[in-house]
Image 1 (cartoon, rainbow, N blue to C red):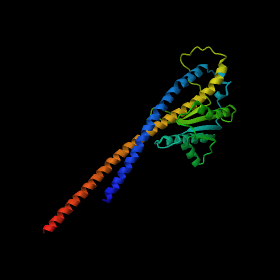
Image 2: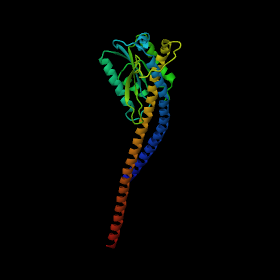
Image 3: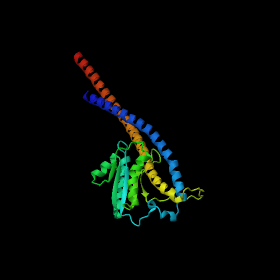
Image 4: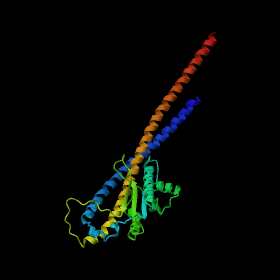
Length: 287
């Protein structure tokens, strides 16, 4: 019964794996709900910022604000890649790394020098492995990023853009559409591209002036873009992990069914053989 014992061991091992993947699926489902709430909570503020910026913007004002500066050529570009610290999320991190590689290849093909920043162990580990020079890295951000985290990541790059050390800044993140749709996305965050102006402009009472408001609003707008990238990537990670763990649990169930059928057939064949040997021995004694 060596084969039967081997099959029983495999069945026990797969059952243990299925318990783990089912637990991880439940944990990811719980975290996903909270992450979705953070994404939904960030959207009204972002929409309000974009609306006010759109109404205040004018080409005449744009010339006075460095964050709106449109360089003739991008000689030095900052790229911020956001990935997760953990795996077991299917192709989630691989897709983000692939998008970053495509962006880097395109920018370097245009002659730009890259200043690379990495958030998350997965992206950091890959680009260290391939020998990419990394300006800054962060692996201490949790799955509950804050506005302060976004400011820490982008304020230095904003200052470099203002002083013309950088000509553009991009962020690569997972755009959260739904738990099953989190495409890797590369977005330019500097220079600021004002949102399209609304058909109906709101009538504002501006105090002290449009210039003073824009000077405060533009950095908030850039930080908010990075904050949304962080929360959407965190939500996308949990959605991808839940899907991956559900698929693993389902596959473990299918494997158990096959192993149990194989074990039952082997056991039935052994019993049949034992009965045949007993009957044969009895017949031999009669003879």
